[in-house]
Image 1 (cartoon, one colour):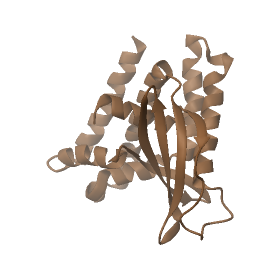
Image 2 (cartoon, one colour):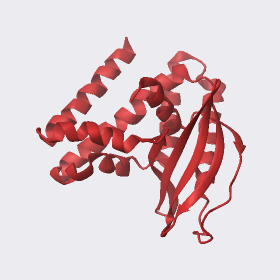
Image 3 (cartoon, helix red, strand yellow):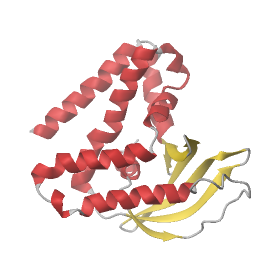
Length: 220
């Protein structure tokens, strides 16, 4: 995936965008879980929390960035189900991992998705805006939904779609599509190439090394 497109994905993972409009909140399906918040609202609430943290004057000093990053991480882990994202990214090779390997994989992959790129976003965020287009429920399962948005960056509008499902009574994001490209499928392709000929431990070690290298680079 191109760097610019992937950066937009990270922006959406972190919710680093200003909600500029809610164009169409109507639903395709009449039936929906009426005791739970709507999926679009769940996404917007998380974005509002992140923006509040980003604008907090306490974090203007560079020595406060780690503290700000920890607070941001708490917000995004509340809306994104990184355990499910990790499992789906393994595809059919998920069965190759035992419980201990799966735990390590989820930990390292989550760190790669969140901590590594969060550091970049803190430096590169350019006040992108988001237009909320619509939310729809799955035709046969009203506990699965999709929220369609447009990320407005300068003169470009990039379609970004969230896939959500209800877990423990709350809407959680398990995939993002940017211009039709799925975050899960993108990583699944990369992981399958490794797991076809190598063990899960090799994949986990690659993720761990990537995280270590990135952390060392950030400390320079």
